[in-house]
Image 1 (cartoon, rainbow, N blue to C red):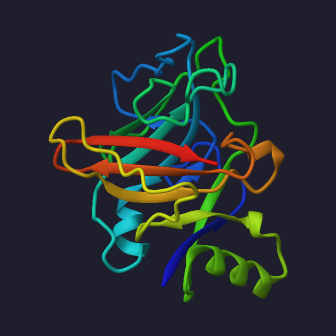
Image 2 (cartoon, rainbow, N blue to C red):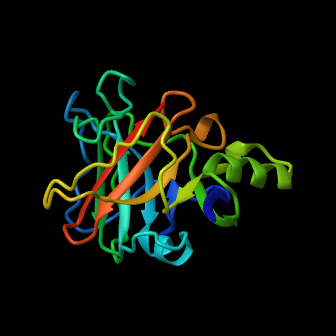
Length: 213
C-alpha cells in the first residue's frame, strides 16, 4: 500500500502539508542562506509529520511538528543543492505550534512561483511508479498530479542515500518523497525528472533533504 500525495489546489500560507507558498515558522526564525553562494534559499515544502502518522503507510516512522525544506535556486546546479550536507539545501523541524508567516528576504530566489496543497490517496500497488501511474490513469489525469508519497520506503532513482543524523549518527527516518510539481510554475527544481527525499530524527530534532535525478 502506498500513500500518494496528490495535487489539491493552490495554498500559500495554511498550516498544512504543501509545496511552495510562504513557510510558517516559530518566533526568532531567520530565513536560511545557502552555504555555498551565501544568498537566501528558496522555500520549497512544508510537511506536517502528524499527517505522516495518520495517513502514511503502516510502519512509517511517527513524528510531530513540521518538516520544512529550503533549496538554493540562485544559480541552479552550482551550489550542490542535491546534497544533504553541502549547504545548498536545508531541512528544519519546527514545533507543531509554529504558525508565524515568515518574512520573505528582499533578495535571492526565495519562493516557488505556484503553491500546491496536498491530498492523500491510498493505492495498492507493487511499487511507487505503478501506484502513481495507476492512480493517474484511473482518474484520467497526468501523473504529474501526483506530488509524491508519504513514508514507507523511498523509491530511489540512483541508489540508497539515507542520511545519518548529525547529532546521534543514527539512520534518519523517511518522511516523504517529492516529485518536481504538477506544472512548470510549481516546479521544485530537481534537475528535470528528479525526486526529492525528506528525512528526520525526532529524538534529536534534526531533518535532512536530498534529491536524485
